[in-house]
Length: 613
Image (cartoon, rainbow, N blue to C red; front, side, top):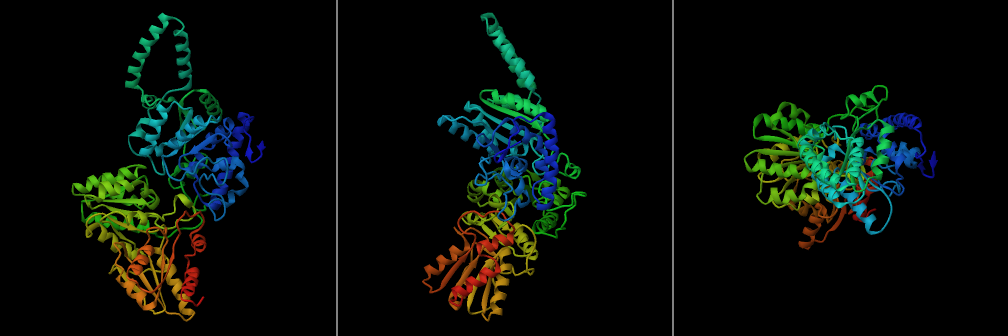
């Protein structure tokens, strides 16, 4: 059944296919229970993925995933089964589609709502280059809460290109879907046999002039009635041939309909209904908890390692306290209620909690509207998802200087999710927004203080950025000043902020053990940056290292370096950061070591800069 690096499923019988699906589910559960990763979403698309591989050849046909956390079955079927135990580990398989990893991965997919736009581009390239392959976009209903999906659908429907959009409808993104689109999809009901009957009726009536006239009149009446009664016209009015909904766990029916859809000219939308977590009771009962998991016990579904408190939980706790004191405070999330620590807020203040779906740009602009009318909106968002709202931060928030609080979760390295999720670009973006203030707490205690300042004291746009997970070695509150000296010394100046201060303090300890006297400076507010203490320390030591878990362009390090240059200060400056590119997947300690920003590398770089390597 295996053909080169791919399982050839084209000759698979339905019974063999059902058995294969059962085997794949067992492999998924066993594998993810050891490596961690996205389980519920993959369990939900087992039959759909097998059906796709029965009908299409992904070595030439282009299968574009929308948020590729549902690609594990695809990876197994395309020659990567033996490597699944390396999933999301340093040097191992990526948890998302990755064209550099396999020819079967058509496009990288870590953020939602882009698949249809990508597919239209591929279909147009196929037409212009006179090539022959199929293009399929697999998009979840959760991704339809993002505006880019509709831009793509609108263009795809009018393009005339042969492409298939599969709408995987499980009623979930990470948590239960919100908004009008989820209600619309629940009412869709148009089947392939209806379309076949429609085609036959048209062909028969068009054979004579009388029949043609009757067909035109009946078609017009039917269109008016259908537009009133059937919501499927939403997609058909865009130009799609709509099919569905189809049982996403009936392998035989899925295969038959995919073959039929493959023969239809023009854009086709296939609506498939699936169950997130299908086949594993704990995941079916709690699909949101099994969306992304750490290693767990297969028998019970319980995690093998209990996690302690983290920055997200502390943020949620403090925001609830602030909301008790001030009724103007509202919380906003983009489909990340539990991930950003807002579940308790949603229960306690349901009238002041707003989940807008996967629509970060809309979230910022909605917050601008709220702020303009006297509310205090707090938008909790992952660092890499904030990237989508850059224009709105400039145009809708900053020009009027509106008081919106951006709580930037997962700032810095996040680890196993890799390039698409490393939070290393937000500071570079935020620092260019006029009037912006950015706080960078290093501990839970500092987050409590800085969040209160951001919400109740600082005017205009303000951001508080904090990492995934918990504290490191620093647990104190040194937030009284924008910049503070944690340790005094005269040999070298070590500057950092946020969670990275832990690595710098460990590096300082290594240097002191070797007989050096480093000065450690912690920045609490990176925008605007008060560099006076850093410059004074640099004048004293003559050697400065700025250590950041952030990309180098537009970084704190570059700003300090330019200040030193402008002041014509004779000083050695070394910037330690994530560089100017992307960072692969792996554990955070492994990635810090690879990038040279862990304690050992910082200490070694300091000795080299001092000329005592």
